[in-house]
Length: 279
Length: 129
Image (spheres, chains in turn red, yellow):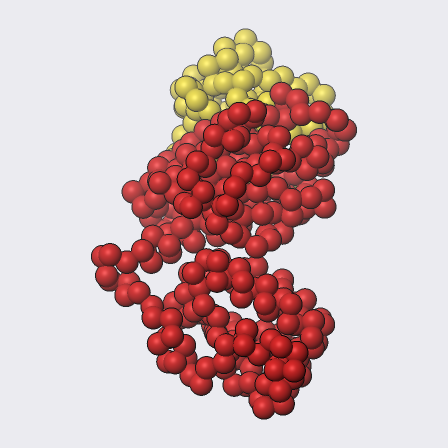
């Protein structure tokens, strides 16, 4: 048994299984990384079928709720049984589940912006989400196949400050009728040394000129994948040549944190980042 | 399959990709491998080098892989010279453009050595037919 999702009208509805044990909590955590990229405003968790919830679920649920809230998305719960409500109350987490009686009630509590409202920011958000999704998928494929380095997406977030441990990066500028901005890949030193070792079976202790070339080439592959996907949705992205970021250039990119999404990607050597800044 | 002493020219402006393709070719047993870092230098080498196979990136500044392919195919000496294009983009329009220009096969990045081998076998089969 697992969590089943439906997405419609900016609502992301997740149906819980009969029993949410430790395994299901872990599955929830794994699936929720992808849910965060859904172009939805309201996340509703329906527990109509659920009779047991293990306490391991509390922390992953709360973590998802916090991440969604930081991106202006709301979470609600439906159909919690009385015994489960008592259990959650006793654990002090019932309030976080934000119980509602219907989807309509959730909509009233978090009104959706009309998509045809020209003042609405939602179409732009949808475009940004399409871009984020395309780049994440492209990165996963590029790193796994070309660099022999499987990666997983961690919680995406709006940029707050520059990462201080970045040693190398690459950047490509996106110019499309739908979107203008920059996409950067940013690597801490040890993470990139490990990726390069996986790529060429060469062990190095310092970043070299060849590695700078590799950072740009990996972004070129990621961009190619994302471009193919996005141009099927009429983005009209042209060919582009990634540039290397090193030294002061790293701190100077993405100067508007409020317009920059950070997508942390985790591999065995650690975490590196995709940053997408929209103009 | 191509013999191990087939003279190969790898064309890419990015050293990383030249190194990756070279590594994959060496892994397949090829011993005679040369490189060029852009389409113009590649064209100069093609005219003098007696290459039996070109593996070229598409997305290069100045002279793209497609430009190089068109130049190669426009010379009667190289009309049937096996030419593989490597691209990070899989858009149907671009692939059609490459086929129309006479590409022997194309490889979409990211790719593995097994994919390169499979493509080379297909090209060789077509050449032998």
